[in-house]
Structure formats: structure tokens, C-alpha cells
Length: 143
Image 1 (tube, rainbow, N blue to C red):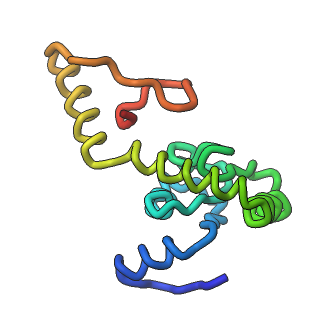
Image 2: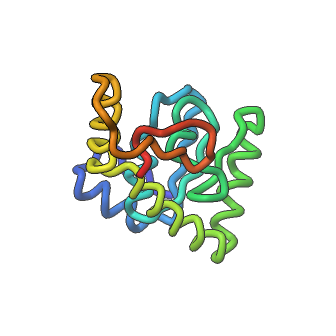
């Protein structure tokens, strides 16, 4: 494990590409947790507590593990160990991480925002919002 502290964007990307996994141990309800998508863009799966907006980008068993907050440190460490000791799982979650990051591109965001604004203005919208991967609600940023 390496705690690098504050680094440049280039060094951050290098560290994330070299990492086997990203641990997001925050129990505070992060509004989003951008670091998870930064890691996902590098193909690095994540383990995080299921709080706040983390589940907007982290889908359990798709691009990492969402740990119930009640699981505490034991559940968190179990999720880390599982991914680190199962190469096939790690490979699958790494591919899922890249796919998750692809759903959050600037182009996808601008396209979705344009659809929302056109709809709000009463203008015809070319395509309805696409349901998010969990199928729970329309996601304006999924493509």
C-alpha cells in the first residue's frame, strides 16, 4: 500500500494505472467521489462504503464492491481481499471499471444536459433518457 499524498494529475494517473485496487474507506456520505471515476478510467476497480453518491458510479460486482456501512472494517477488508486474491474477478471488475468510466464522459454529460434543457424548454427531444444500469431511474448522464 502506498499513501502518496497530494500529487500532480499526471502522477495521479500513473499511480491509478499501477494500482491493483482503489480503496475509498470514507464513511461520510460523499456527494459523488470523483476519485472512483478517475481510477475507473485507468481500469482500476474500487471498494467503497455504500454511502452518499458513491453508488452513482460504483456498481457492486460490476466495477468493484459496494460495502454496506454496517459491515464496518471487516466487510471492507473482506471485499479488498476477495478482489486482490481472485485474478479472474479482478480482471472482470477492471473491465467493468473502464466501462463505468465511459458512461461519464464529457460528451455523455453534455448530450444528456442538452436533452434535459430541451425538454424543460418544451422542445422536442430526439431520444428519451436511457435508464441507468441498475434500472432504477432515468439517468441524464448515461449513454
